[in-house]
Length: 417
Image (tube, rainbow, N blue to C red; front, side, top):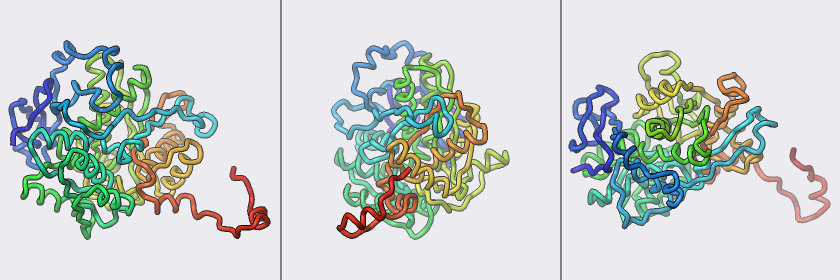
């Protein structure tokens, strides 16, 4: 299968053996390293700089992912009508200084993407690329968000989707998959077993592989969230970006986006990245802390979307934190549930546990001094809480039930703080 590339791609480089390949080479991972040879897309920044659209030209374009077509690794088909991905709001926190001690805190709300998560940025690239290659079936393994985003995006442009999910996948995400018409397989096992099964099926039947950890083009879709943040801040400097981490692809995408615009002169410095993992599944944190090779971790956390015991994009994620001079942090499941309630009651944002983990990590980083009061921070809200209603109930408890009688109401009435 010939891999079609965008006009400014000059090739790719294996993050493991560091071999560089030209743009004429047709594969998605390093042939010398096999499945562990994750590729990083390389761009001709000099050529891109010469042909780069001006800020004024950019402002005339629709605010969605295709606004950044010059910076993407795949050719963009003008005739392709996809769901509207990107162009998500960046809110300045209304409660940050009084409640949490941040002078300048922003929340990037990726939960308003069409299927409810940041994963739409990767999946719309996947289906567009599959379509350009003449593929009819797209597939992936996922704990939920990547799967539901792929299913929705595929349905929009007439592709079939085959999805493998581990047995712990929340009902909200499973319902999304079925509504979108995907062929879904719930695997008796964890994410590692689910991924292995999907990998074998994809290789056997020749389906388009949407697994973001091994498909280098999907990081290129995720990086557009960094472009948007910088545009929305008016190209002002930013100190920290905080994100929850499972496979490592979103973190890698953030770094790639900031790196692109730094190389092209639209950013004076790359912000530090804070990777947040759950204490119940923290292989990347442990590798960073101990300076030892990555070890398999248990997948024991309420935050299903980041419960990845064997991160496939570990090297890119660890490099992103190291090269940005950032840090890693872990949070408990209780802190995640508390953050769900806090985000909702103080910012009006309904976050699923994996998204709440980032906010919990932000608060812990402030308490421990990793992030200071005066620094400008963006925290990424990656997924809508409607995807996991059971976890939301655990965070806030049940509603108060009363008889249809004012006296009964009056006995229970008390305004919440």
